[in-house]
Length: 305
Image: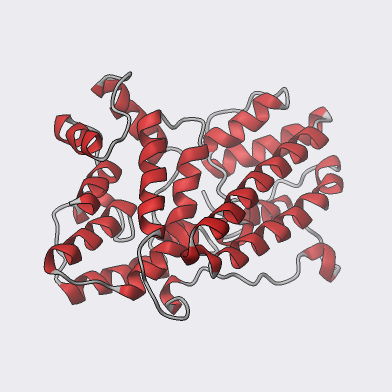
């Protein structure tokens, strides 16, 4: 089954069976050894792009948010049980979500609410994989294939399930309300896809740093992002960093517009994501002064890591 094959590739480091699944799906399997692909899997999914629904739908971008518990309830209702629950880390892992679709397919059933919810965020996760500098060809193709198949699914219905709705209406930022804006506030926005409209991985942040003439220390996503902006302010490279982030936002917006023109399912999904990109452009436009003044050392609460 197609969904089961995709699920296996998202969930596990590749072995010979996984490569057979990949070949059957028409994905690139040559040019890298199993050891290299295994290292690529870990680099991509453990360190850079976190393949969980809550990361893309929750304003905190943390694991085990509302979408995770909602997914678990759908699984229970339809008798979806697999030993991979113990390995995935959370019930809204992409691989488990696809495995659930495969489970329903075998039963001759569907879950329109769940499919609609996946269509809202999983294509965005897939694009994060495709755009990540650490992704090898197999995983870029896996992401693109997953997105294309999912967006062709007929989910029906007028809108999204509340549990799958990632729409986030942020309160005015400090600049608009007269309050002081801290770097941690900006990072909380930029690192949460449900707020910013895109996903910035450690590898992408590091690449932006290198393109701007800076080498960043190793660390978690929040630490790398903070180091990027601190270094930009200290070295006078604010314009380069903000320009690179604007280019990144434009690329994501262009992808959303393309999906909207190609897939009827995305017509109702594109506006919220594109609105987030608009808000992010506004944030970036106002960051110049913040980064040029001495940076405070406070760490805000609920900042994605």
